[in-house]
Length: 127
Image (cartoon, rainbow, N blue to C red; front, top):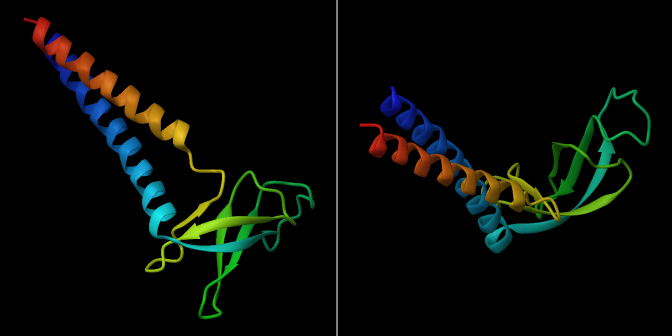
């Protein structure tokens, strides 16, 4: 039983650590080699929740070729502007300045590693 629990903990920890490291790598990639643009925060069409609402908002930003991209956003107030980084090869991959998720990325990686170590301990001492 302890071996199965240890393996389960290690697998769950591996998934969490992979999620944290992958998200952090994406942040670093966009910040180091991504393009920047100023995006307007606008209410999504058909959103009746009011001007001050953070639900149903879109980021609108212009690419160098003049095309306008729209991406859903959360926890932003319509009417503002924010700096974004986007991948030139995939302009829909966007990162909003100040919303990197670094704390959550580190938390996922740290908790994942702790679960892996706990799983290894269960397997090692479960005999």
